[in-house]
Image 1 (cartoon, chains in turn orange, brown):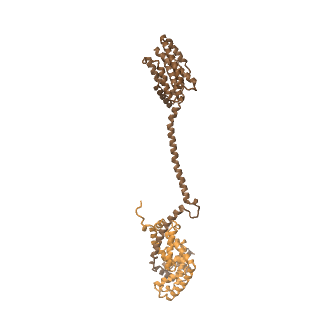
Image 2: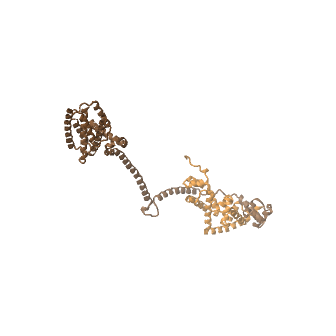
Image 3: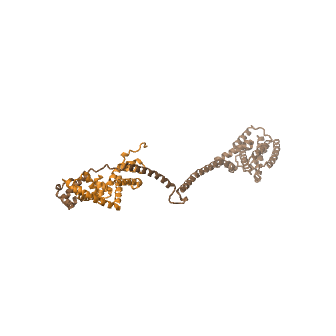
Length: 193
Length: 339
């Protein structure tokens, strides 16, 4: 006979999802607390450091968790399922016509900024230039790079989230690094010394 | 070729992270040069990777607090709505079906059908129980109303041929009849034997002349309470008992060894015994008894014709029974006189 409710802190993500599907509000709140910040940062970096867009995408993501729980299959890792939804949302956003246009304008602007102030840039400048350089990557390369170096996923986990092989992930990472190296060449002189 | 087998392009990141260009062995350096143009580029990539990995990313970014409240409310409302939608879907289809195809109507019909079946089952059982009880109660009534026809032969072989129930019923019937009538006429076999023994011992001294008339009066009073059909059969039983047992006793007392069971119409053995007894009687007693017998015979005929005791349809049997009874009375009376 169960007198006390479950201790949600001890439950796994998959167990919380099961409780949430059956209408447990606390389980859903615990899932939100575990993943909301990660997903917000993911969207923020994937969508050109736009806080408002990151906030909207985070809300849309969790609304899909609420309204379409049947898309989640038991036995699959919850974080993998969540990131797969998030990456698809980002891909859809990239495909929209105004996104490409907006990205190209920002790149033009930031390139001018970074080239003129590269030698005096401090750590904040480098961050900004790095975010701008990421926009020059294609979608797959950007996603892999962000998940690897900003989200802290291992190569195997990225391969699971993106439903591809580990070799593909490593290759995308290498070519993304080459592109970024060219874009951030101004910092190489100072950092390599 | 060997270098390709050992290293893939995706492994260059590991080399960039771990080794400087000058630290690479020949095989590794050859592999790196296939993907990276020069030592300078290798150094640039290695420095960028170090910057990216050492970069303290801003992990303090969080979504707005209102977003959490909004999502939890949506989750709560979603599951509340789902219950209401489920109930609606259960009872009413929203696809514009006619009323007779709505689920609530179909559920109601199904429930009514099931309830009707359930309610009909106990009624059937109750009817069966009533029938069973009626059958139990009717069984003895049927046995008493329709006893198996008895003949003198059946009475002789009673212990072998008659079922236990029928024997009991017949014996009770014979006892009941004998209890309301004179013992000489209606006693069962063992009573008759006792009566003969008493008479033989002289216990019964006086046989009044009105005995026979009282016997018939009692017998008629008894039989008027019964249906003609039953009374006829009862009389047959009594008559058979009387003929058979009494004659048998008489024959046994007189050491007449052989005796055949007397049929209703077979009065010849009795007659022969009477003749034997009468031949031994004194003349005075014989005349006295003959006068009594003639009076009794007239009385019997008169009573028998007016009491409705006999069945009109079976006049032969009636006549035979009357003759048998009268002759048996004669024999008994003569026996009394003789002893």
